[in-house]
Length: 140
Image (cartoon, rainbow, N blue to C red; front, top):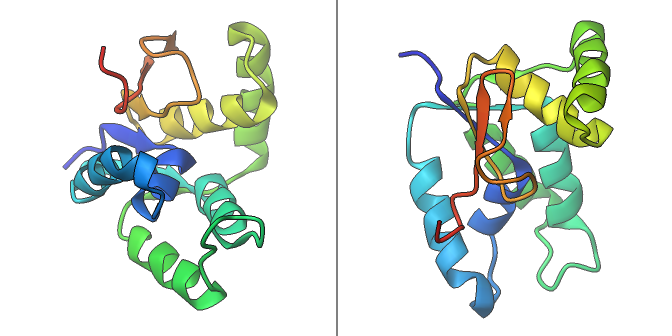
């Protein structure tokens, strides 16, 4: 099965959210992560760990909980960060006027063969070299 959708960090973070105001986003994230046509990157896993376990989070995950989740998400294809990916991200950032970190996500999505990037951090509907950003939490 060809990978079609790339998951950004916020999907993983909403999956573990216990904040009442984020209950609908948590449900949507859970549905997304039950699918099989997904991919993610080392960057996404790193960002998830750092944000999910930070002490200032309302209910931080323990190291063990975060590691267990990361292990489970490695069932999806994971794009590794390489010199070539960094180079592509530097070009993409300039081309689409994205931050370095966002352009690295876009380029990882492209490297995975995904045509859709699930994220609330970029502009819904934005197209970046064959990858279209879709905010799964947007009513649009």
